[in-house]
Amino acid sequence: MTKRKIKIDYRIGIHLFFIIFSLAFIIPFIYVLSISFSNDMDIKQYGYQFIPKTFDLGAYTYVFQNPEQLLSSYKITTFTSLVGTFCSVMIMALMAYPLSRSNFTYRKQVSFFVFFTMIFGGGLIPSYILITKYLRLGNTVWIYLFAGLANAWHIIIMRTFFQSLPSALVESAKMDGAGELKILFRIIMPLSKPVIATISLFILLQRWNDWATALVYINNKRLYTLQFLLQRILREAEFINTMMNEGMDNHLVGGMINIPTESIRFAMCVVAAGPMLIIFPFFQKYFVKGLTIGSVKG
Amino acid sequence: MTSAKPKLGKDRAKLKTNRRFASFKSNAEFFLLCLPGLLYFFVFHYLPMGGILIAFKEYNYKLGIFGSKWIGLKNFEFFFLSQDAWRITRNTVGYSFLFMLTGMFSAVLVALLLNELKNKSLIKYYQTTMILPHFLSWVIVAFITFIMLNPAYGVLNKALISLGFEERQWYSEFKYWPPILTISNVWKHVGMSSVIYYSSLMGADKEMYEAATIDGAGRFKQAIYISIPFLVPIMTIMLILNLGNVFRGDFGLFYQVPRDIGALYPATDIIDTYVYRGLFSGSIGMASAVGFFQSFIGLFMVAVSNQIIRKINPENSLY
View 1: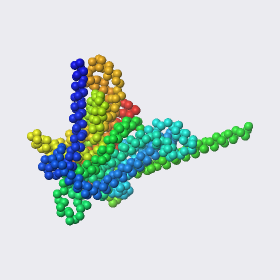
View 2: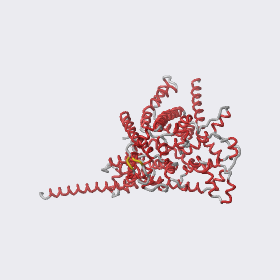
View 3: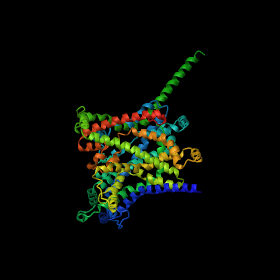
View 4: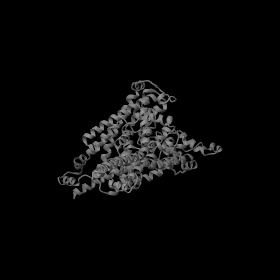
C-alpha cells in the first residue's frame, strides 16, 4: 500500500515540474497579447503587465488604419513562401530522382557536387558581392526566390526515400514507354507524399520566418518580409512613427504626435506573426516526423 | 548455317549499339532533370566559393572581384593582430560548446522525465507547448526577451524592484549575456530536440525495466542504469555532428536577441555577426579574411567529426 502511494507521489512531482515548465512557454505569448491591448500611459507607469490595467484597442486601430506597410509585407512574404516552396520542391525532386536511379552513370559525381555544398561554402561576403554586383538581384523580390532555392540535405532525404520505392514500378512504366519525367510525376511523386509534405513544411516555415535575406539584400521598405518588418519595429520607435504617418493626410500629422509606439509594436507582432503561429503547430507531427526522416543516412 | 553466324554477330552488335544508345538517352534525360538544380548550385554555391579569394585582395566595389588588387595576407594580418580575433573566436567556439552541453542536458532531462509519465494527453500537452518556440523566428524571440529585459518596463526589473532589489541595465552590461543567450537557446530548442530522445526511449526494451523493478531498483536507478545508457549512442552522434559546426554560430540568436548593441559585443559578438557588420561598415577586407578562415576551419572540423563517427558508428556518418 505504502509503496503504491510513493509511486503516485513522484509522478505528481514530475507533473508539477512540467506544468510550471510549460508556463515558461505560454506566459511570454500572453505578455505579447496583453501589451498589445494596453495603453501606453499604463505601460509607462506600471511597465509591461501580464493583464492589461485598462483594455485598450488603440494600438490595433492605428495598425488597421495604416495597413499599407503591413499589407505589402504580407504580400511579399506570402508570395516568397508559396512560390518559393513550390519551386524548391520541384527543383529538388527533379534532382533527387536521377540520383535515386542506379542506371544514371554520373550519379556519384552529381551527388558529390550537391553534397559538397553542405560542408563548404564561400560565406556571406562573396555571395553578397556576386548577388548585388554581378547578378544584380539586390533590392528585388527575386532574391527571396533564389536564396536557399535548393538544399543539399533535403535532396539527400528525398533521394533516399525515392530509392526505397520498389524499382519494379519504374521498370514496368519504362516497358510501357513512359519517359523519366512522366515516371517521376505520375509514379514516384504520388508515392512520396509523406516526404514531400514534410520537406515542403520545412521550407515553408523557413521562408515564412526569413528576415536575414531582407536584412542583407533589401533596402526598399515595400519589399520587406514580415519578420524583417517586425525587426525594424522592435528596434526603432522612429520606424513605427513614419509607418503610422504614411497613410495620413498632411493636415492630420499635427495630431499624430502621441502615437502609442509601445503597444503598437506588440500589436504589429500579433497581427504579423500570429496567424501562422496558430497554423504551424497543427502540422507538428510532420515536423517531428522530419526529425526521424533526417536521421536516415544520406 | 554459315550465313547465320555473321547475322547473329550483326544482331549482337546492333543490340549493343542500341543498348549504348538507350543508356546515352536516359543519361541525357537524367541530366536534363538535374539541370535546374545543377545551375542553382553552380551559381549560388560554387561561384561564391571562388569568390573566397577576395580575402587576399583589397576589395574595391567598382573593380569587382577580378579587378581588385592582390595584397597577399594583409587582410589576415590585420584581423589576427586586432583584438577582435581572439574575442570572436572565443565567443563562437565557447558558445558552441556551452549550447551543445546545455542543449543536450536539457533535452535528455525532459525526455527522461516525460518517459516516467503515463497520461498520454498531458504528455501531448507538455510537448506541444515546449515545441511552440520551434515555429518562432529569432525576431519574435527577441520581442519576448525584450519584454523580460526592457530596463524601464521589463518584467524582470519590475520583479526585482517589487522584491526589494535594484534594477539592472540588462542591455548595457555584457556580463549578463552568457546566461541570457544560453537560456534563450535552450528555450527555443529544448522541445524539438527532446523529441529525438523521447521517441528513442519509446523503443527501449520494456522487459529490462520490469526485470529491474523485480530486482528492487527504483525509477531513479532505472533511469540512471537503463535509460541513460540506452541514449548514450544517439547522444554521442549528436555531439560529434555538432562538433563539425563549432566555428559557426547561430546568426539569428546573436544578432536579434542582444539587439546588435555595441556595449554587449564582448559577450555577444561571434564570427557570423562580425562578418555581417564588416560587410556594411566598410571593413570588407578583414571580414572576408574571417570568412575564409571560418570556411576552411569548418571544412576541417566536419571532416574530423565525420572521421570519428565513421569509427564509432558508420551508419550515421555523413559520407
